[in-house]
Length: 472
Image (cartoon, rainbow, N blue to C red; front, side, top):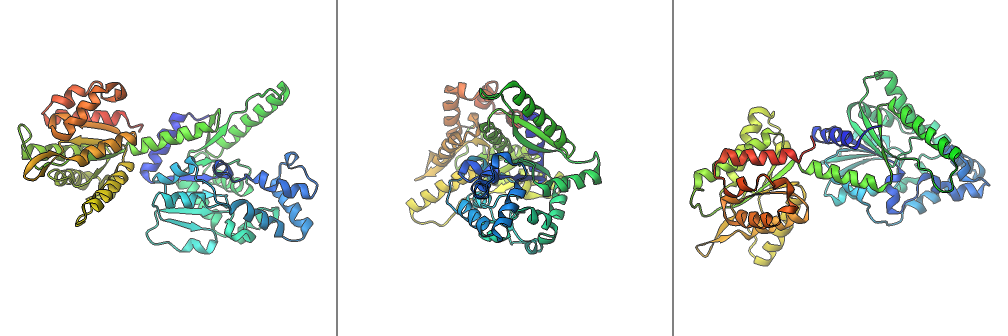
């Protein structure tokens, strides 16, 4: 049995390394209102005199339906009716499609994964037919393999025993691609029962090829519990069966995470999302007026060292190119990237300069607000320094920094205000210090953040805070 901590540690690493994948079964779509395979077949089974609850081989039931009618019309109609309806997006799909995961496999006929990717402003390349495998969609940032077909092509959906027997011929290369992904990526299986003969065959081949050198994958499974209407013998049987299934999955490198309730899966995925975002750090600040201890050179040094050390520790820095500090943030990040990060700039630095040239004041406010929301949503950590601007020739607090702070609070970001730099950062610092019980991660750092002007001590404290909040 895998622990939640083990899963989070290894899967977060896979996401950061670009080696994470998702395998989605019918259970992932069920919270949105789509039926699982058993319920899909229930009315068809009743039509031919079978009780679906007494049947274990559902592919055989589908085949009997096909045999009885002489064609696939009833099956195709059932698939269309069940999966063509409009449903609400569920949180599990939303989280999984927002994360920087680039490979999605599914046996589902619905479009939830594609819709989730679209909602996350991601361009998906969907593969339903083997002929699509050789084509690459331009600017794609996720590939969705629908190995059993799609609701819009119900006549070609894989469902009956014949469909499975002919899969190698009707879907050539799909099994090979999946086999390659299972060898090279870390999968999380979600909403999947592991009763699919295609997957079972592929996993078996990988086991034979690699023996003990298989990758770890993960799946979620609800613990068997004894209900009021279940006697000891029935419970013992169900528990023993589940234990045997867990041991069998280990042969394929699939580690089981047991949950007491399916809602726990959502909680784990939320933790996963927060941990992944905690690796993305937004540095907020702007400065038109350099005053006191924070003269221009020192401000630039602080911005440079912050970005440089964050990248050195493996964090991804986002900059809105704030006035007076943006260039230093970029230079600090780039110097570290070019010296030791193999020049993979996008993995370690994200530049988000604000749209310019918008004459209409209200239009600019609305666009900048939306732009700020998008930036904050992509980052789990927000660092605030300085934050002043010129208004009618006089110094004023940068209200954009304060807006970003409110957005960061709403998004439950890790917020780090360098109050000693003054201006908006000082306002944010004072508010957080007065509400310190809600920011326990800052408890031993409030004094440094509020009074320290030694750059190395400030940067050291910030690095300690963000590393402590990162799982891996």
